[in-house]
Length: 472
Ligand SMILES: Cc1ncc(COP(=O)(O)O)c(C=O)c1O
Image (cartoon, rainbow, N blue to C red; front, side):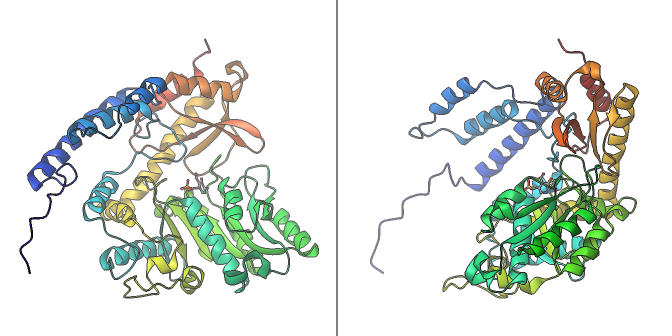
């Protein structure tokens, strides 16, 4: 080879040497620990000033470089004051958890190795590891031969379910889309189901009108008789029922649809049965709670978000199905450049995504560390926290309006405390505890979910006091 000048050096700020890397990561760990300690004793909600922050951001013109340490310190400070804090022990949130340490370690490992999980050839160990976790959770649900994958969230997993249902219902869907069907297709979910189903119907190309929101029983559960009537009417009018999505743990009130009855109807009618257990699915780890999900074993597919009650870091859902070949049928592709060692398992050929992050390690490490028993302790503790909140509030004249066996309360305040949404706004704004307002069976309720695995007795007392504080 002719003599060449040396290659330019890589930018040290992007790729520092090992000693510097270790120093910076240690610095970041300490900064985070100190910040999280302040968060736990501070406000649950953002305390930043948007105008001031925008002015600060404007100073980042990306012309003059800055030391990474300084930028990290700045970023941690901004997050400390600029988000609603899931890690706050008085955060009774929208399913978003205080994340487990093993899950955070998984993010660090995934960040360092940066494996590409698109293919079995490039990431054989991560792909096997994820499949192992999926099988374990599938077995816990009683699904025969659970296959599936990790997804970015419940919405993606639920979308995957619809695509499989449509693909099974008519093989022509792959080429011709919704036009393959003899009439407009219909997907059923209860009136209390998650709001993303509308978007999912839209993005699947069957249109938002394809979603038939089935009546509930007045207690937040899908009414199987109403479902049967809706299917019959749709068929009589030339529509094509394809899938029913039962919810195991509704977003507003933690209610579980009657899975057995819905499964029987789905089998009778030849409908794909999906169970959206995005939050409630974690109850499968508890011998005491899992009977409430009886019937889930009949599902054609199942969504469970590890980033909800399993408390991994955000963006970690599971899609589980006994119909592995359908995944390949729905998501196959052909390229000249992708390495592959097992097309039936290659995530880029069996899922919505292409490039893919190593998400499953978060749940693997968490499960490996505490086992089913440790997780049972975690979910049962959440139910105990909620029982205590319920007792404290009922003693002060509140009325519980849901009947969920899981860790979620829907309540009405005594009239003296005023209207629900104003009350919730007042509590949230004060920043000492966080709860949500939601609509349950047509009326506004205060929604309280145990989402922080470290909530203590005194946090429950703070919450009860905050909710009963008079306006003014
Ligand atoms: C029952 C249910 N399904 C689906 C979703 C959507 O999940 P994700 O936010 O992970 O996309 C949620 C979110 O709260 C949910 O409660």
